[in-house]
Every structure is written in C-alpha cells, then in structure tokens.
Image (cartoon, rainbow, N blue to C red; front, side, top):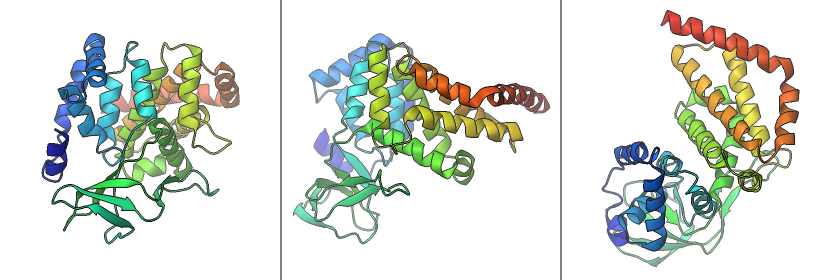
Length: 307
C-alpha cells in the first residue's frame, strides 16, 4: 500500500468526504475508535494504518484531515494513544519553493525520488525575538511526492512534536491578531477551532498529571512569556472584544462565537492541571469579561432574530 500511495500521490485528489465519514462514525463510538488505534499498533499494513498514513503523509501541508481524524477518535480509552502519536509524528510534508535546489538526489524514480538536504531548511518562521523557528536539519531524507511542472511537494522523514506545532500556530495567529487573520483568510477559522477542540478533548476528564503533560508539550516552542493557556485566553479575549464591538455579518458572528466557545472549553479542560494559572487569568479579565459576555449574548440574540 505504501508504494502504491507514493506512486499515485500526485494523481489522487484528497477527498475529505472519507475523513468526514470517519469522523461521523467514530465521534460517538469509543469501542470502534479503540479498535482503530489497536489495529494500527498491531498491524502496520491494515486498512486503519493505510488511512492514518494517508492523512499523516500530507500533514501539515494538508492540516485539517489529520486533526479531524484524531479528534473524532479521541475517547477516554484512546487518549494516551492519540497524545503519544501526535507527540512524535515521523514525517513533515511541505511545498518547496519553485526552483529550490538545496538537496541531493539519493535515488531517482519516476514517482518516488529520495533526496537529502544539503543545508538546514526553515519550515516555520521565527518570532520577532528570533526564536521559535522550526528547522529541518541538514542530511534529512525526504521523498519528492510531486515534480515536473507542479510545485514540488516533499515529505521529510523528520520526527517532530505535533503538539508543539499546534501551539506555534496558535501563537502566530495571536501575534497577527485573530480578527486580522480570519478577515484576510477565513480558512484559519476551522484551523483555530479544530486545534481548540483537539486540546479540550484530550484534556477533558483526564488526571492532572496528564493535563500538565499536554500543556507542556503544546507550549514547548512558544516564547518564554507565553504558554498554551495564556495564548488561548488572549485569542478568546480578542474574539470577545470583536464581538463586543459588533460583528460585521451573521457569518462573522458565528465564527467569532465558535472560536470563543471552543477556546473557553480549552481553558475549562486545563483547570485540572493548572488551576492557579486559569484563575489568575480570570482575575485579570475581571468584570470586563463578564460585561462583554452579557452584551455579546444580547447582541447575538438580536442578530439571530433579524436574520
């Protein structure tokens, strides 16, 4: 199956219907999800392994399918398995700039060319402080999944902490301003929401030590003054502020409400592991938060009534 996937990668449009169907079935089926992950661990050539391989082989170039798959199969019985899987993802897939030549060819075939990096390659930009960049090191082996006239797509055989990447995505969105980001590109709304849902799902009902492990893993590459709790709090605060000022449309209202709601669920889940951090943020928000929540509720009711 692996060889077939590589040989046909550039010809097969990835159909999210498969993942949507998987999600609809697994989200309310803990036993089925347990069987799914058990089969993956026991048989690497199983249909379950093939499906996971297909979505993981496109991550993070294709961001949402993997998050949808792991979120929908996340239950008490699969919590640790899902966390451990994302904590050490074996590959990182990206599009190379056209004309990029910073690699040597190890083995060349028509649809499966192996390359190795000649120099370090930045795949996630640094913050303004010069830290937080994600670098694939010199000598890393990759597979060119598309060449020729198309923009080259490469899957680097480079293990990385997927939780930390999710944290950096949230941090970057916060730095650029939530409303600015979703106004310029609405596809970031499901990205934020899926990350929040995954975080709240993996922490909800877990013991304090496990919650702390999740928070630490997700905050690993953030700036020293931030962690996933404070970043989530600020994203929710920005969404609520925008709602308080009045969303420009019903669609924008729904987007901001969803971001605020799913972000609050993350903070709720994090209480078990870092109660002191959560309460300090609540105190920081003070009456401003509760006043905004009240006004937003009234505004939402009016907007819905008008529509």
